[in-house]
Structures are given as structure tokens and as C-alpha cells.
Image (tube, rainbow, N blue to C red; front, side, top):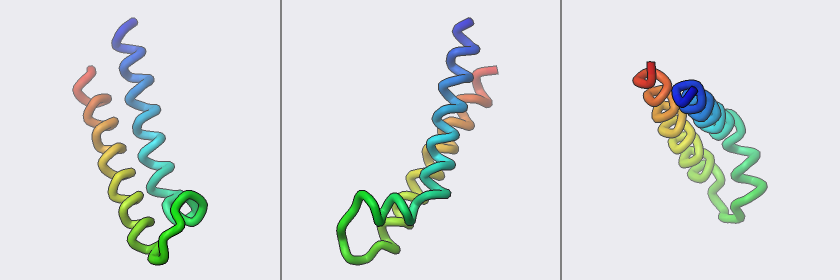
Amino acid sequence: MLQLIVKFIAVIVILAGVILIYDARPLTKRYFGFGDQNEGADGLKIWGYIIAVIGGLILYFNM
């Protein structure tokens, strides 16, 4: 049962990372008000990639 819960949490973390990667530019426009939005979008994409990799590693090593 605990493994199922950890797998579910890992999938949610991967989903959050993919959402950050896919919606980086709209999220940057909505929540951040600084001038260069390209740097903000790049930062969100990097964070999304890191979060997705961490979720994938949790899912992979939980088997």
C-alpha cells in the first residue's frame, strides 16, 4: 500500500514538472512582472525539468 502511495506522489511530481515545462511562458507572464520574460521562462523550464527528473527517479527506484 505504501508503494502505491509513493508511486502516485511520484506521478504527481512528474506531472507538475511537465506542466512547468509546457506552460513556462504563460506562467511567467501571469505571475512575474519583470522585463525580460525569456529568462523567467527559461528558469521555469529548468525547474520543471529538474522536478520531472526527480519524480522519475522516485518512480524508478520505488519498484
